[in-house]
Length: 181
Ligand SMILES: CC(C)(COP(=O)(O)OP(=O)(O)OC[C@H]1O[C@@H](n2cnc3c(N)ncnc32)[C@H](O)[C@@H]1OP(=O)(O)O)[C@@H](O)C(=O)NCCC(=O)NCCS
Image (cartoon, rainbow, N blue to C red):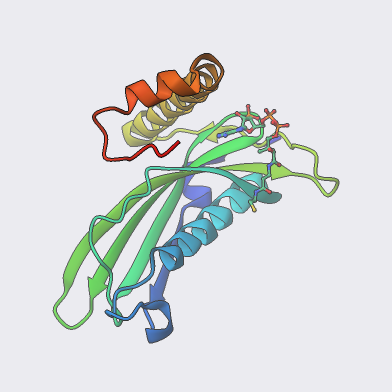
């Protein structure tokens, strides 16, 4: 299987924020932006793998700045890392007010997608050709993210099995909740 460069699948989608995307105060719903992120991640992953892909996990989604109707949202996506069947896609989201030229960086996040064949079985994806220092740094960082994510998953599973309800209640004493049983 032929390795591919990061540039081969690099994708930018720009979308006009229309009134039906907004809530009552004219700000765009977070779910609309999430859907656009999923779309651009899919395009990037499908181009790299040449296959059908599904979303497995999402990391780092934060809405730092509100996005308003009339703004142009651009999502720039590239493959940061490939494993066997998985790909981590980095997405930078920017919103532009066309009249003033004001540009906001609203979010950077990471989508993990896997490639599947027509029977739903995992497919091995092409290796990634790293052509510069940025490609190397992003690959390294994404590999670290994948390892840390696995550590957190393991930790959560341990805690679920170790803590009793009374231990959990003790750990919540300083928190703003009222236990009523
Ligand atoms: C994701 C999925 C393929 C994992 O299946 P699995 O049998 O557990 O397979 P594996 O454990 O071998 O994982 C396959 C790959 O996914 C990665 N993966 C699995 N769970 C993951 C998670 N929570 N976060 C990030 N990556 C994950 C693994 O690291 C592995 O990567 P690699 O092949 O590059 O080494 C399976 O759970 C699935 O198909 N989920 C549904 C996805 C979907 O339909 N998404 C659309 C949402 S509506």
